[in-house]
Length: 219
Image (cartoon, rainbow, N blue to C red; front, side):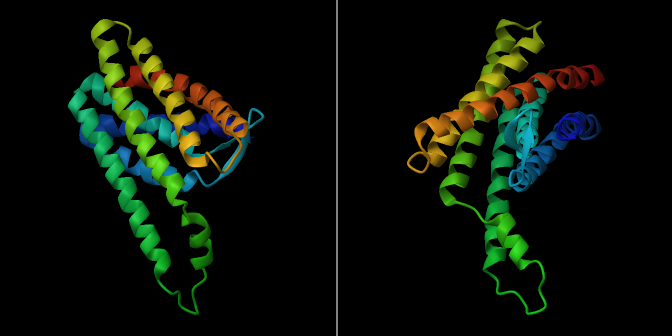
């Protein structure tokens, strides 16, 4: 069931990226980047088994940010894509600040959701800092590499899309796990987690290529 739902999740999420750009142009992609960053920080809390690996539901939403910036690089400009990354990082920071402030309030005796919110929004400062830092670095690197490959191989959109997304996503994954868990988990365990997550992220990255072509065709 998880495998079927996984592919449905990919199709639905990437289709929404294409649709919001079709309806609202680059402004729609700015909105999507904000939405995806916030929702990814929520859905990442849920772990599932997929293809024998344990992964989080946040992977597809995070991957959709690469698709969104690639569409902006392809149809608008490199600067528009960079602006989108800044907006998404700002949205993520606002989400973290507001949720942590919310948890500080003393709940009413009639409250029934505070404990659930504490479980959902509880964060490790080290983990969230590593996540936001590597999210920013990897997306900026993706934009730079995508545009460099676009200049060199203008007729090979599939090449620049896959090379930039897969390379930056994989590097981000290994650095994030190292920054977040070094000294907490044994290094072989960190490498194992990063490797299995990378395999899943490569599959997701390959799946976004048809949606990039669809977005270009709809223009």
